Length: 231
Image (tube, rainbow, N blue to C red; front, top):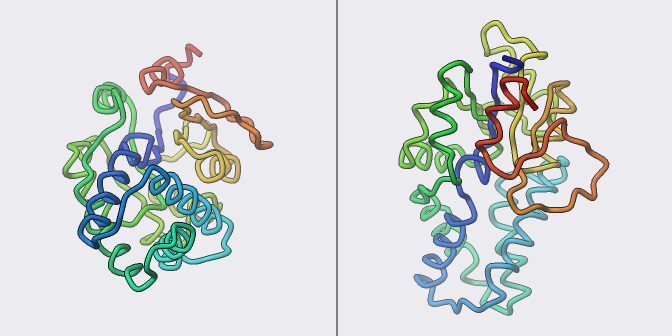
């Protein structure tokens, strides 16, 4: 076995955040009496991604991300600014109930957990992560979940991973692998932490960055051969 310490990102790696996001946004907008058009979700997602990238770069704080993504979206869609904070709060609340999982996540985690130690490494909001992990049934597969709110710094910062490594018994970088969907957060984080990386890319996004993951997969079931050193 090549790797027996596996660090998983949560959103869009084991939990299907896209489905949870769409459901929460529609519920929040409906409760606020706001229209949902064809451009609503794409506009929000664009601003959400941009805000989180700024967070990863240390240019903004998490509390600012959670509000400013809605401020920008409302401005672009010409929605009433006085409803920004209500929509943001409702969206956060409804995200707690997004229990959707990525295809094959549970079967893969169950199989890998027989011989490997599994951990979550996430920049997400802790209360939402806690609720979704428990509700999805995936919580039981992970020894510990490291969330940036508790750590005090975030992916891709080296300090985030140093904190995690210090709290994993018998940690060995050569036997550790990080699996995640984000090049800027997970893969860059693995590079900063000097561990091997696996980019989960089910949508076959073109890698236009200067980062080269050790592995790239489009199906979580491909992890087994990587972990066993057969790929």
